[in-house]
Image (cartoon, rainbow over all chains, first blue to last red):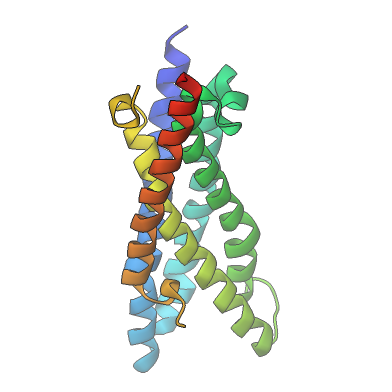
Length: 162
Length: 35
């Protein structure tokens, strides 16, 4: 049945666009916007109305992207994650995506809950949470560059010498 | 030393450097597998 891999690839791309699109929104737009908004006391509009909605789609899109990617690998899942022979290229991309998913659910989201007041936290805890969430988000932005390269260039086998 | 991830350009440049490093690692893995 050829429909399932095609649908999984479609889903993987759609969810991936939403995930990485929102990641780039946070890093290229929101961080700078919050700094400017804090200066004229308008940051609450972003933190109350924009950030929670963006984070909702961000974290669930990350999970859907990973699951659809895993389904797409199918029987080659182990070969990819063990960087076996012909699956080394997509395997590196898969590992980068997995590290990024971990960062979203284990570092970014729990700390954002403290920052946005969804989870109670002291001012000191909020300062620490802000730094951890920021660095995890920046790490994901950095990792997205090689991750997208290995996803896109995986099909161009000639550049790897086979 | 400043953390390159504190700046947007530092983040992008770090990502590009990592891409190049991982490309050579991938190439080595593929060549080894074919040998």
